[in-house]
Structure formats: structure tokens, C-alpha cells
Amino acid sequence: MKNAALRPTALSALRAAFGDRLQENAPLSGYTSARIGGPADALVFVRSAGELEQAVRTLWDLGLPCLLLGGGSNVLVSDRGVRGVVLVNRARTVKFHSRDEVPSVWAESGATLNDIAQRAARLSLSGLEWAASVPGSLGGAVYGNAGAFGGEMVNNLVSLDLLFRSGRETWPVEKMAYGYRTSRLKRERPEVFILSATLKLSHGEMPAIQAVMAANTEKRRKTQPPGASMGSMFKNPPGDKAGRLIEAAGLKGMRIGNAEISSQHANFFINTDGTSAEDMRRLLELAQKTVWEKFSVSLEPEIELVGEW
Figure (tube, one colour):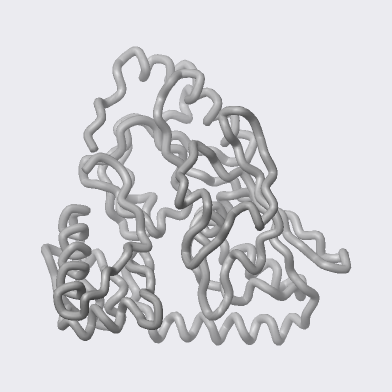
């Protein structure tokens, strides 16, 4: 979808609202895990949930579109970039309630899952072992029901704080109607921003917790390729694995430009050397087409295409 770039009057309003925090025509490749992405018309860092709320309300008042970018995994930003304003979420305050009978952690949506998990382990708090070394932010994990090694966000989330135009709301986990790598927010796509979330934990022994986390991290290192990627490209279809299907279709190691289907794990697509978003999308579509032709299985992307395509 093609949208007009910001008008000079809008840029003037943004300069007045954000001052030196505003970056114009800012490349987004440095803010995505795949190191891919054209420029945003405007970019602003937010460093607390309060700053995030204030920035979003300012943009709503100005009538300007905005996109929130957290860890930058699970997204493919177009070569043409993003029209409007990108808010880079660096709201990362984390607070543990470790002495409660049922311990928990409250964190702002820009906090990384790995950081929360590592800090929990040092407090002898269990429940997030699966999240060690998982890329991305808490907000993205809550939005997409991230998971690994038998754990997923639905099993940890207690509640989340959301910002709608009508005001702030706190939702219990049940209201998210979670499914495999999806949620009510992901399916319905309302105009909403995740500010923070509370996760439940349990008491444990630090050596045992860290041992599980180390084993998970080592397994990830051995089975998932290094390099710039978006994480898993496709959801696993029922009863099968996306990577197995792509490999069986003969696509392991396939390249378009500098975009490559990993020879280590076929559900990871690697940016080998400054590839374009368009080449990565073409590779994604090739995998979908070939798997469908060979096995009559429709691969559903786990990633989201962002920006002007």
C-alpha cells in the first residue's frame, strides 16, 4: 500500500512536539533483527511507558500515522520504508515481586524477553526458562504469543496494560484469546499500543533454573543459524514443521539476491550481505508456492510485512 510522505506542515508540528528527539528520513535497517528496512519519514525513541503514551497521544492529536517498533524481530520492513512516524520502544523498566507467594514481574513493553528471563533466574524465579535467548521485546511477545522449548506467553501472562484512543485499559490474559502464535490483538488489529505487562513466575533454585536456560540456549545455538534474520519465517502447520516442508521441497540453501534460506534450518531466512526486503519477500513467496505445489500445505508467515510495498 502506498501512502504519501509527511507534508512540511506535519514535519514542522513534529519538530515542535519532539525537538531534538525527532529524526527525519531515518533508515530502519539498524532497528530490525534482519538488518533490513528503508527510511521512516520520522523516528522518535521512547524510553518509558509514560513517554510512549505521551508520544502516541501527540501523534493522534496531530492526525499522523505511527508504528511502534520494539526488538525488530518478526518484521520485514519494506525497501521504501514507512510513511509517518516510527516510535522505537526503549521503555524497559522491570520490577519483580519476588517475595509474594506467587511471584511475578511487571515490565514495560520495550524490555527484552531475554533480559527479563536472566534477571528472574538471578532471583531464583522460575517460569521463563523458555525465554532465555529469545529475541525481541515483551510487547511483541505478548502480541504474538511468542514461545520456545515448550513454553509460550499464554502460560506466563497475567495481565497487560493497553492504550486505546478512548483511554488506558488493563486486560486479563483471558481477554487476549490466545492461539498458536496469535492473539486477539493480532487477529483483530485494533488501534492499540501495549504499554506493559505482568507475568507470573514461581520460586525455584537458581542453579537448576540457569542450567535449563543454558541447555535451551545451547540447543538454539546448535539448531538455529547465526546471522541477520527475522526469526522463524513461517508458523508450523498442524502436525508438521515448516522447516521440514521447506527442506523437503528442495529449497534449503536457496538464494534470491543476498536473501538465503538457511542451510542449517530451512525456516530461517538469512540476510547474508545487505539484501533487499523485496528479495526476502520473493524468497518467502517462493517457499510458499513450492511447498503448496509439492505438498498442498499452505505456509502461514509468522513474520509481518511492514511499510510501503
